Amino acid sequence: MKRLTGVVCAAVCCALAASAGAQSADPAMAKLVQGYEQAWMKADANAVAAHYSEDALAVNADGVHHGRAAVAKSMAANVAGPWKGTTLAVQMGKSQPLGPDMTINEGTYEVKGVKGPDGKPLVIKGSYLNTLVKKGGAWVIVGHMAFAPPPAGMMPAAK
Image 1 (cartoon, rainbow, N blue to C red):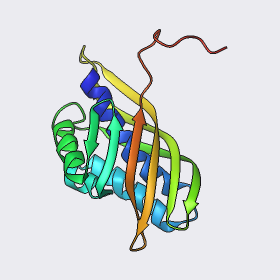
Image 2 (image 1 turned 60 degrees about the vertical axis):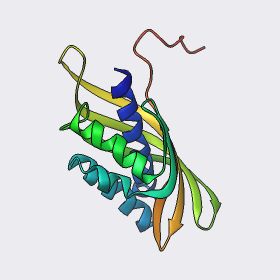
Image 3 (image 1 turned 90 degrees about the vertical axis):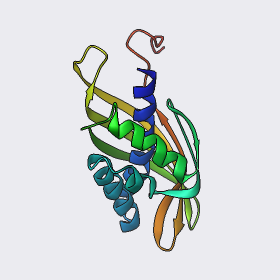
Image 4 (image 1 turned 45 degrees about the vertical axis):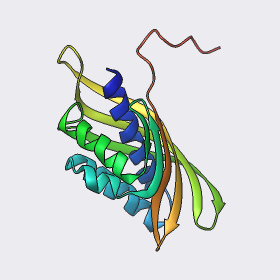
């Protein structure tokens, strides 16, 4: 389940980047989100990783991944394993510009088609936080963090 959560986190990162464009007036943001979701659904780990910068830092339940190659390696294992046959939907939240070519974006993601340890279908929902940089007119992910909630009963009740 830890590996599955990690994979979901990786998915969330991608979704975050993609999501950032979905609700933005910036067509380059929408292109990032759409491209990420499409690459995910094709189980194309290299195409997913292409949305990250060469020196990107991605942190999720699967671990810490330094660079595009490490993201591709992690995604390849995940789309051949626990994420095989899944779909990803990203919902972009708010963005906080850090300059003309850099922004931080938060949002949510949902992965469907995952099988739990008991073989029953699960829907994994989580949140992400991405740092995006615009290079050559296109947004790329330079920093990614994905979060999935712990299993039911593990979180204290909100006060």
